[in-house]
Image (cartoon, rainbow, N blue to C red; front, top):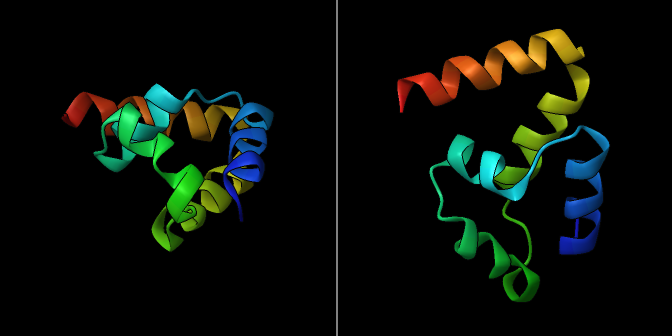
Length: 69
């Protein structure tokens, strides 16, 4: 998955770069580096998992994960 596909996938599930970076423990600016280096496997895996969840499940997961930070 390239960075453009990654951004489109985030948009499809209504997540921002900022929220996704919080879930992965990254700086939002660091995710921009993925334009050059490619999207890491762990990020693709998380994104695919989030896509399989219902909107309610996804929202609950995100809220729970961010609350722990």
